[in-house]
Amino acid sequence: MADSTLPALTAEAHCRAATRVLRIEGEALLTLAAALPADFAGAVAALLEVRGRAVLSGIGKSGHVARKIAATLASTGTPSLFVHPAEASHGDLGMVMPDDICILLSNSGETSELRDLIAHCARFDIPLIGFSRDPSSTLMRAADYRLTIPDLAEACAIGMAPTTSTTLMMGLGDALAVALMEARRFEADHFRTYHPGGKLGAQLTMVRQVMHSAVPLVAQDAPMQHVVQAMTAGGMGVTGVVDAQGLLVGVVTDGDLRRNIVGLLDRTAGEVATRSPKTVAPQTLAAEALAIVNKSKISVLFVCEDGRPVGIVHLHDLLRIGVV
Image (cartoon, rainbow, N blue to C red; front, side, top):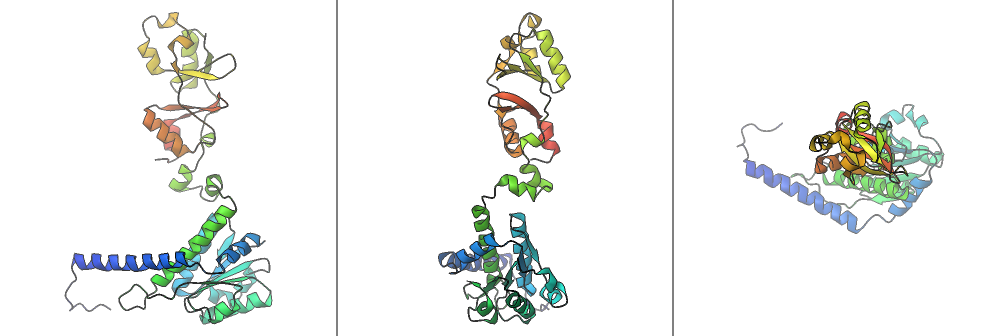
């Protein structure tokens, strides 16, 4: 418990402490980046080859980091789960199967709670990846792949609270996840499969998933009466104008009608249309489509494949799914 009789530190002192911690941890990550563990590439290869799941475990702060790494791996294409080491010793070892691979985290490498998991891996010949600062520890001697983190001072004032060590483990876990993503050619469309909800899911939605497939279209020589009818039926205040090959050559909007009100009904769609309209492909991200809409100050985009309209998307469609 903090001593309430001590004088309160100033805001400047708080900022100095924060700066010191961030610099210490940042420099530690640079040290790790300059000298990756020798077994890093081997660990990536082993994770790529495994037919089962990556099973992560650790206790205390290392356990929290292990949970995060498991979540990151699972969301980026590597089936993963976290098993609490104490629960593993009381029945959950059955969750770790021969086709799996284990990733165990322990700063000291001597965490007693991990011993049953280590023994289980040895008994069933389950590949083991170890995270620890001590290459000669029990965990690292048992591991098939030793991801040793630099033995650097913790960032706290007393040098005991897990700070630098957990940052290094977290960074190494992220490095594994990204290396696996790149090896698997994991792309935005795959990422969205595991992130369907919230703002991230909305940003990764593709235009084809929100577009309207009923597209109001008229020929270039269509009289304006037909154009107005098509716009009314489409309900978006716009119709596309196509040539004889079905290629989109222009659009007629409510604004075009107002600008050409004099003698409007004596003209054709091609004469009134705005040429070279903004379009997007079906695989365009919804976030990219919204950026085009905002930059061009329009409310509707035609969706085209090989120049032919296959859909139409309105600003409201993009806002409705949460793209901002």
